[in-house]
Length: 307
Image (cartoon, rainbow, N blue to C red):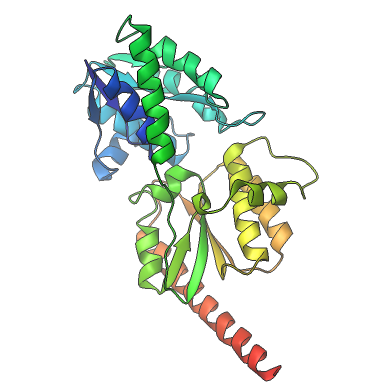
């Protein structure tokens, strides 16, 4: 059986688990290519106008592979941490895709509660039965997928740059090079190194969250806030670049929390949608780079004069 896995949304974070699980069950994996103009155009064509860019892109990935596979995996991810949730659009993602894109093949849409091994094993059992009645084989596929995900070293941490920034945002905005216009390469070309949240221990993130008057409901919001504020307060970065989808309600809250916490710390917010122009993107990055350099020189001069 050919299983289609769209390279959109949380594929970038959990693809080792996804691909290993279905492969171990004997399926042939069919993935869409990296996001490109054709996929974006298909997503815009089929998806509702009110959806954010990542959801539109996901529609495009599904449309690209729907005729190349027997069944498509549309992750209805509900939770990845206890007492926390992710974007509400994930809850209804399968219905959006199935009702918007014509002639869809069979889909895998069972809710995924990944906050514990027990809850995730339940999903694996319910999904695995589509491929085999052998529960032992399903269990082995599940364990192999967990191991593959655990061994996966995600994240980015550039070394040997004088200036460094935290690159913040939902994983699908940070790692989709087409969506973010290859922002990491652009920053590197400007002499700026990048660090992402995967390189920070969870206890440091949690310490920052504990300082808030109320714990965030959303896992990625918690990570974005805790990771960026920890690095800034401990002088491990020179600035923050936050990539946010236009009209993202979760990001709008987190960005204000970061501003409130860090006051005048350099923060560049890059809003993206299907109309974002690369020229404007480049101009803002260049201006931010110039500002960081001037700020760094001023800091060094003040430091030397104090001696």
